[in-house]
Length: 318
Ligand SMILES: Cc1cc2nc3c(=O)[nH]c(=O)nc-3n(C[C@H](O)[C@H](O)[C@H](O)COP(=O)(O)OP(=O)(O)OC[C@H]3O[C@@H](n4cnc5c(N)ncnc54)[C@H](O)[C@@H]3O)c2cc1C
Image (cartoon, rainbow, N blue to C red; front, side, top):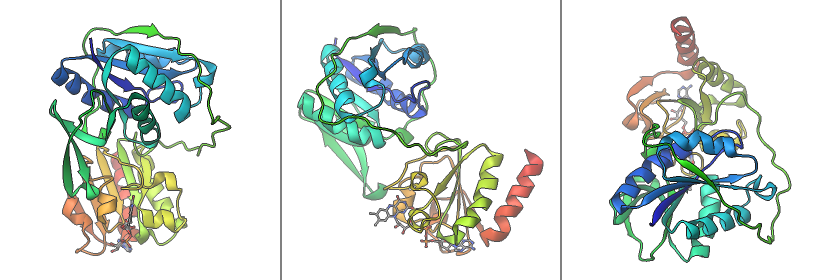
């Protein structure tokens, strides 16, 4: 029977939340296409990750393990994904949109001679929908190849809850391919805070922060919620904060329960990365700032006065 196949993202021990959003999409798609739903875990000694997925009702969780697959490269994981897709007769292969998705899926599409849809936000069983121009237009896409490869805009889908019968885990041996690239090392930014894409609360600062030292105000507020720090591109380009915290069209797409934007004007490229947040709070001294058009709560005020006040007030409450 044909299937929808989702490539699982993990940090070698734990699932990434993005996968559970891709899973929500995949459940809907499998129903519409009347196919099975399968998951693919690639890595080395990652059975624990596969086990975390067992309560989510997929038909099969394919587990492909080898020391050569321990660290992601597009060449090795792309090879494995395409091979498993063939074995489970996948007609739709997906992963969350993100750095890995953007890197991996075009290669998988090429290997399977499949049409590709990026950043999809909906699928009616026939047409795929994606947003364009920073969310100001929608494209309806028909894929004419038998197989479709997709990156899924996770922020458009909720986090899947466990449900359905427990999935079986099937180990597959996929011989390691000869590659032209090899993994050398990974240099990770160490932080006690969650990544903006994983956090329930994101507090972002923009050019209005006026300098790197003032991001301490953002961090103090963030830490009350065990949240993530985010930033506009203007703050990142000024070198005030690390670029892996940039939110927006060319940064990360987030949809936390609460997004607080301080000193951010609300350019469409920033909105593209956060407008699906459940509750948006904007702090800006300019009442005409476009960020107020998407915010649920707007504070026209000097952030240097109100952010510390807010932090103090919340500290007493939490
Ligand atoms: C192709 C492309 C891709 C892009 N990708 C992204 C992206 O991924 N993410 C992104 O963010 N941008 C992106 N941009 C840039 C985007 O267009 C804006 O330039 C950027 O978002 C502006 O950042 P900002 O809001 O921090 O700065 P500004 O637009 O300069 O706004 C600063 C705001 O701070 C307010 N302010 C100043 N002082 C205070 C104070 N004391 N208290 C309260 N408020 C204050 C001001 O009123 C103003 O509204 C992209 C642009 C292009 C062309």
